Amino acid sequence: MPRLFTGLEIPADVSSSLSALRGGLPGGRWIDPENYHITLRFIGDIDDWTAREVSYMLGKVRRREIEIQFDGLTSFGGKKPRAVVATVRPNAALMELQAEQERLMQRIGLPPEPRKFTPHVTLARLRDASSWQVADYLAGRGFYRSQPFRANGFVLFSSRESRGGGPYIVEAEYPAAQMAAE
Image: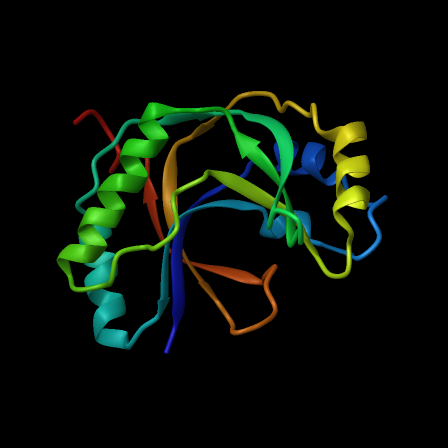
């Protein structure tokens, strides 16, 4: 059974910029830069028939390129931080792309995604990092801003069951040619 999700790949120059933020946080398991991505829709562990349906439905998406920019760092998990992430500057086109994928996945019978979509790239997963250590890390690096880049398509990723952070495999690409004017 493949574990699938859709996402946006991060260009090498932006990944390199993000990777410069690694380190300096006890308990951080840093994600390898080649595994940086923005998850659009987690699909989960599904059978091969459903995976083919997912791929077919994603092929129906027609969207323009999207300009993306990372605009700050934060943590997820509240008082028990579990991840440090780079957040994406608010972007209506990105939200619309994610919402369309959500609708398509529900149309083929997948349950709704229970979490609110918060576009980000996970930089580190945290174990035993205190909230004050995370706050200290963010105080020094939280004002990070990347150069804008164009997402000229999205991909269907698969992952092995693991503790997170990759490796991820691109199963299908949905390039800008398919995302042309609506």
